[in-house]
Image 1 (cartoon, rainbow, N blue to C red):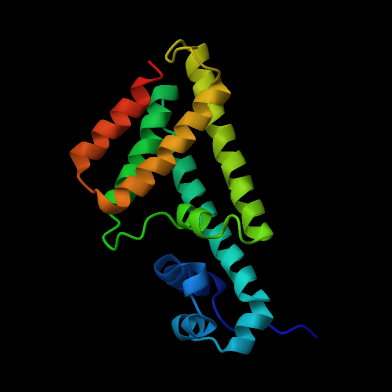
Image 2: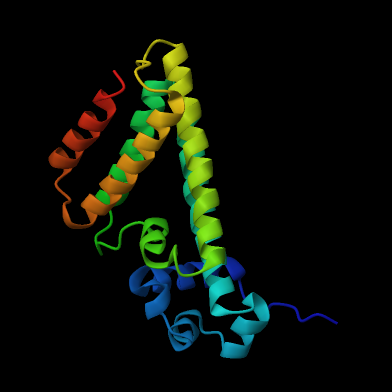
Length: 193
């Protein structure tokens, strides 16, 4: 008979997220996870399989939470330009509210682990593909609405925007000047006019 989990999985994921976000994957020990989650090692291994599998579940939970929040806000946009402003303003808010200067867990993971572990690389690739597809769809709609220029294809602009978002997130770790970051966003989006 399989063991029944006697803990709240979502709470454990949130606690593990905090540890991984603060220390990174390589800097996080099993003891750190035991201390943070109040689970013993065997419970962690029985429930998640390994530190790596727990980390992948943390990444998935983090990604899903952020995607759901973004989808809720995008529903209320009126056109492609509004949609991009919502996306960039969400990232700006995240930067301004990141008082511990931890940055984005997914971007941190990409810089730390993308070339070290195939399962992580696969996860990051899928996340990037989904984000690029969303951005490409927004840009394409904006081009069809004549809001954005057609100097580049929607796919090329999507990659530009994705790269700009990552750069903004990295810049925001050390520079939290709202006006400066708003100017960066304005400059990024001006390319599409």
